[in-house]
Image (cartoon, rainbow over all chains, first blue to last red):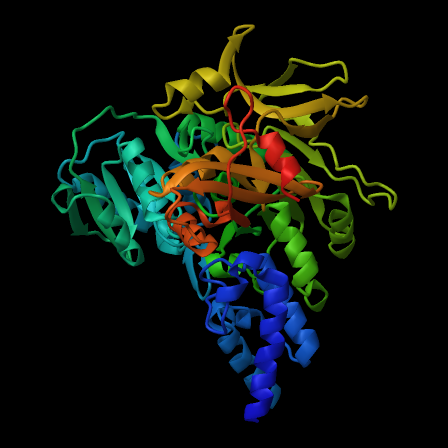
Length: 87
Length: 498
């Protein structure tokens, strides 16, 4: 279980870094870097991320779950994805 | 029934449809009668405040809610003009706006108290007021002129680096609302969306046209407004009949909203404005919502809607060029000036709905308005051509202003923000068109040699000082190229980078 979560984090982290992080900011990017509140990701990139997560992990976000509380950091996203996968 | 003041629309509808829902927000709703009573009570309290003067300006800083609408109508009924600002905008920008137009009072939501830090403690008085979640703030300052006919001031991005206040009287606003009444169809059973924030000009149609018709308004909070899945769900839940937003929001709903899961046959009108709607997603949307009538509304804040065009369905599969902005609204006049060989020129608008001008901004007023043929004209800065069928086609901008996600952005306002960073020596901001009508904002600066500013630092500096939609997409420290006359060489930046 722990291993799986680590793996989920790696996958999400790699995707976000590749798609949304400016080359100059990549060095300081961590799993705790705020993404939505810092506006590194705008609303459109957030939706793109949700699309990716749904396909990659075969989960589904309910309308109200597309929210900063679930998406602000790689840690939070991985928590959410793991919870969904267990359901 | 003709009205002289915007709040009379509410009084008329409350007399005709007292039990109809006027406002709906989440689980809450308020009937026309209840709304009228709450507005009367609030306006009485506003007027009873010490130092209150009819015709003064009252700021409103709050998230979207039923109380906020009560606040707006309460201010109008008290004989004052309201100045709405985004509660999620930087404190310095909102403080600047309230100082620039000299608001005497603010209806401030308790979640926005941080704004008060903008002023010296001794110059601010905070009191309770009978509006849920709000306080009444008085800014102790020298009284300046009061304008009895002012209804509201909407601030929009300014090319000199600071937002400018577009002023509207009741007559001007009513002229627009009456035009809506003559073109669209809506009644007491209609349900309007209110997607745009109240400091955005789309809110004028949402609020006053719907209330004129005795219809219900569904107030969409800021978090849901950005979430296309919530939007798609709420059209079905509230059986929205009249939708009005920017094309960006509609495109996102189409792309990410899972609209095929919902029954949207309730939609009768889909109105959009604020930017060009690319034909491909528009075609798809007209196919999904085939029962609805689609209108392309065009107009800068200064005129509100000034041209309109009903989308003819079906849109032919091969068509790629954007739809016309249409014909001039019947209550206005249009003309095209400085027409070049290709037939392109600047669209100018005159008429009773056009703003009286920018609040205390002589330079912008003399720049943008001129008198000719006995009329006063507003020069939009938008370039148009007229097609053989007489319809106007939008072709671009005369200046550097851009639209991003439907928001109006002057790169100079961003540049001025970079210059306010204490370590910045020089700065330049460009908007690069990455695909038709889609812009990426790029910020460049040079700083005092010994102290570098990281990209992260600059992003958070911009976030503190600019509306979120103006925060650049790219940040880079570099020498700013100059022309032979020592002006910023924007063309060279556009060429050099990427």
